[in-house]
Amino acid sequence: MAASTKSVVCPACSYKNAPNATRCVSCGVTIDVGPKSKADPSKNRYTGQTSFSVIWCMIAFVVLGVLTGALVIGLPMVVTQLDFEGSNGMLVSIPVWFIGGLLIGMISPGRTFIEPVVAALFVAIPTVIYLWAYQTVRVLPGFMYAIMAMIGVMFTLIGSYLGERIQMGPPPKPAD
Image 1 (cartoon, rainbow, N blue to C red):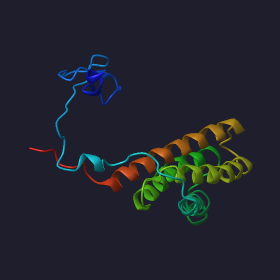
Image 2: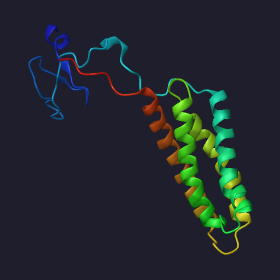
Image 3: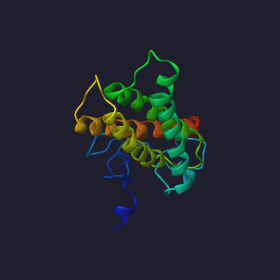
């Protein structure tokens, strides 16, 4: 029983190794039991979603809606050479949602990277309906709009996660 309390848990796979092991028996990762940084180990940075914030979801909805409306609908009205109808509109929406997720991830307090994803899902529905209804030359079937919208929502998740990582700053300096 005393041996189980002295075992070293692998940080990668959670396998309990012998106390003198330098590599994990299960996955082979190097086990370093010494302090990794000058920061207090009890105050590790939490990288998961803490809770869902409706306020930041609404802010993300407004930001993504304004950006999407401005670039997909408004910009072709000002610059007549641009035509973001049909598939081109969806191809413009995907990076717009990525940038919107990145911006919200950078400015939102705490770990809020699900809120822009939910907002992008609600922005994607009218965007898909608008682009599908007004397509003339660049015609796509409806399911392709849904697939491209889900790709855009996925890129929103990537953007919001990257924004949160940028907001966290660099990792603590390793101990000498």
